[in-house]
Length: 91
Image (tube, rainbow, N blue to C red; front, top):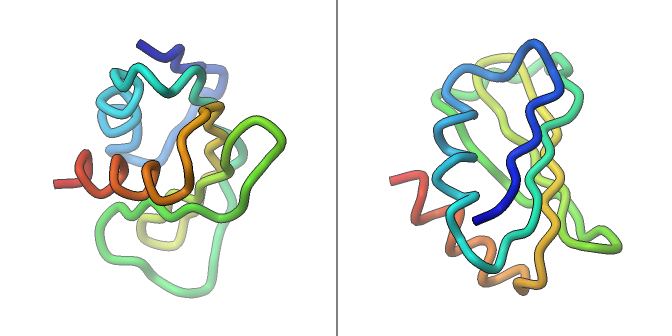
């Protein structure tokens, strides 16, 4: 089970339950939510999308409404594997 870092006082609504489900995967080591920013476009519902690869895993953007939050995931999964895991937990 991965470590879910909770260092911020605020998170996008509904994000923590999704990340908790994702943290149960044995191939994911750490999940760290980051900065929340505002966007111009409106996103209906909560969506998670892989943004880019990092040295130890991936950066993901969570969007809901006009807010977006960075999430860093440390894993040895491939991008395709992680996209499938994200799709599975979003259902």
